[in-house]
Length: 142
Image 1 (cartoon, rainbow, N blue to C red):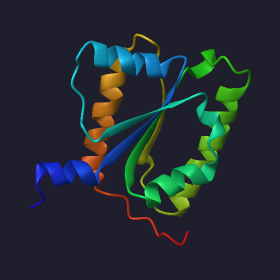
Image 2: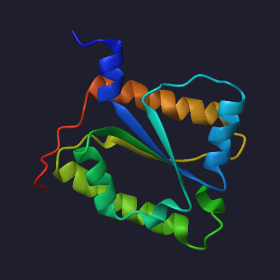
Image 3: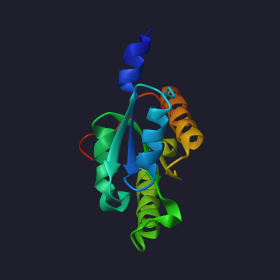
Image 4: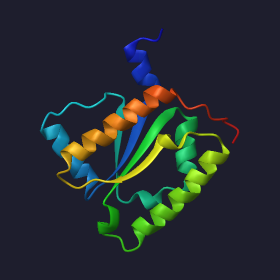
């Protein structure tokens, strides 16, 4: 049986948090000293639409078990960025199906600057999913 620490290390969660909405929301969770899984890594990004489709598959190949894209949603300060992101993720989901990667490993959600409960729920839900799914099995040659 795998130790809880090893289990956490094998099930890494990457959060892409927009600098204008979700990252301040994540920061407010930290300021409130609210606990969340230690296997979570937060990357502050200007806009998640800047990441190409290949980014997500590279993450899975490198051992990231789950990715949460925390965006501003329709309130994105960059005109058309959220719709372009949603379109890109549709293509990513389609490719994930073709590669037999469970779709629960990638989630898009809108998180505001004070959405502590929503942030914690998303992280805990993803943690539960990746514990059930285990590490991703992605062919590195794809």
